Structure formats: C-alpha cells, structure tokens
Length: 311
Length: 74
Image (cartoon, rainbow over the protein chains, first blue to last red):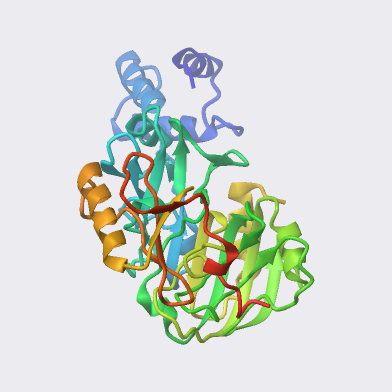
C-alpha cells in the first residue's frame, strides 16, 4: 500500500470500516490507543503509518505437513512445514563442481540464489532434503547420475514452478530404510519425460513400482509392491503401463496406496536399477506416509493442487 | 553419451578416480564421477565417459539393451 493511499484513507475517515484496508486501519487504531495518542496526533500518525506501510503483518504460513503431519519423508521444492528451518536442496554447478545449499524465500525455492550460483551454467541436485524431520534425505554422490535443476543458468520449470529434471540415466537414492518392508501412501507431483519411467526401484531387477512405458499394454506396473489404490489428478486410476505413460505425459498429481512394499534389493532409488532402462520421473514433490492417508487424501490433494495448479 | 568398457573392473575404477581428481568434486556431496555398470554376463564392465577425460580403454558410443535387461519386467 502506498503511503499516499493510507493518508487518503485517514482523510476520508475510513477507520474501522470493512474492505481490504480494514486490517491496516484497525491495527493503526489499536496502536494509536496503545500509544496514548489521538487520531489527530500528526507525529503519532506519521510514525504509525510509516510502520504499517513498511511492516504489514504477514499472513501466517501453514504448510502441508502442518495440516497433515506424520510423513515418513517429504521432498519438495516448496516449504511444506512452517517449523522446518533447513534447506530444500544442495546443488552442484557444472562450471567448477562447487556446491551450495539452496533454501526457501516466501515458502518457495530460492531461485534467485540458485540462478546466481549457477550463473550461465548447469546445476545438478546432489541432495533433496527431507522436510519431515526424519532425516531421510534423497541424494546421489555420483556426478554423472545427479538430476538437473538449472540449465544454462535458468531454473528448469514445469507449469511455472521449479522442477527436478532427470537428463538421461540420473536419479536420487533414498535412505536404506525404504528397502525394508513397509506400507506407504505416496503423494507426488511428477511427469514422465522418457519412454520408460519407474517411481522407486532398487539394485534388484524385480523391485519396481509405478512403471510408465510408451504404448505398453502390460498391466504389471508394480513388483514386490502391493498397490491397493491409485489416483491421478484426484480421480481413481487403473490401467496399463502405456496408460500411465499417457497420464503422466503432463504434470500430474498422483496418490498411490501401497499396502506393502517388500523390496528385496538394496539401494532404494527413484528409478529402476541404474536407470538405464526405466528412468526417474521429473519431480517437484514427493511425500511418503507409512500410515493410511485415505481420510486426508482430498485435503492433501487440494493443498498440492492449489499450489501447482495441475488440474 | 559414450562409455568405456573393459573386462577389468579396476581399469574403470581408475578412470573414475582420474575424473574425480581432475574435476575436484567436493568429496562430501559429490564423491564419484559415475558408477560402474556390470554386464549381466558378469565379465564385462562399463563406465560413462567424461567428455574431458580420455583413457586407453574401449569406447562405445552407447550401451546396447543387453546391458540393461528387463527380464523381470515383462
């Protein structure tokens, strides 16, 4: 709000009225009373008007994990929890291989710092921090396998938001605990950018889930992972690998209910084996719960879709 | 993407070390250039070639599908 606009409101005597200025006006009124001043006090008005113009009270941020707590792991390029004080990612720039942690500004990825750091060069994600508080960071220490987030100095975007984009056979590794038998409810914002994609695999060729494969009529989309329900963009989904490929060919929100992940291999990762065939999906958000979230599904999907505007 | 192949795994490990030393990775978040890929036959190995580093190894323009079997994905 411009100072002149506020003075106009003062002159018009709109104190305590409704509309978009009501909060500012009521705050101002309270401060005048607290200061023992009067509405007509020029010095008080000037001081308080300046304060209000320069320091409007921020609207409290509430993240997805504040409303829907208990995630086992939560990766995102937006802030998911107002108590999380860590960074979003660690990025390695191609020009000299130095790394830098990138945090959040206004609850979204700090792309200004990211692009400044990667000035004119490519940037690759070495670590995608877990915001759940469980320390389950996803990472890859092999340079050639790190997915990309900056191309020639520009943040890679999907539908206007930053995205982790896997060029060729790149992927991130999940903590070892993800190879242990467990049930998972998974929410993710992703997109298939190859003919073959796999959500989670291990070193074992028989461990895979949520396969997308161009033109495939196979209905075997999971192995050693018992999926009891799948939703794409809020609607129940069942189909072939080809159907998944078609559905995921644009930015999508998925909710997958796995009653049991019983992977046998080691090194769980966001791809199939070494991503030579079924590769990592392009990703913006990935949240794991080990508890049933069916009663929260609508709320979580709304939270995600309100931010990403997918459907 | 080109690859170096060998029947001797240590030769590819040495190539990885060559790249790591040359590139000066931070050793914390990035420790390797690339993982060594093992052929299903158990006797051939491959590593992704870095454009800036050459070695006296067999170079392949790409790895055939036989390197990435999908036996369990039918």
